[in-house]
Amino acid sequence: MSSKMNIRTGDTVMVITGDNSKDVGKTGKVLKVYPAAQRIVVQGRNMIIRHTKPRQQGQQGGRIEQEGTIHVSNCMLVCPNCKKPTRVGHTFIEKDGKQRKVRVCKKCSKNID
Image (cartoon, rainbow, N blue to C red; front, side):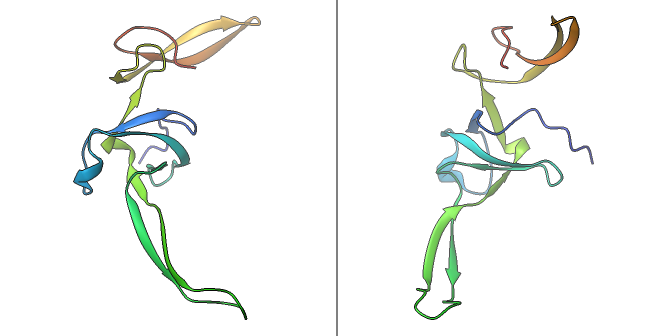
């Protein structure tokens, strides 16, 4: 399994499919990326409830609602230029005399980075 992913922390993504059907078609910001598991955490999407016990004296237990992980194949990057969900291509640009690999929007052909 490859650990290279086209989605990074801080990107805006749209949920295109998945177990949690109420989130399909909605967008959110990527908070965390787990490349080894190919999963991401999207702000306000795939909310799960964790039941916690009080671990110390005076600490409160209860139900905590937090974001769960979503497989990267169930999300699509939203281009910051054209504001549409798009596939990601790559190209090389010359910067400071060095070749840099950058992400490119497949719809508007502009750099995402």
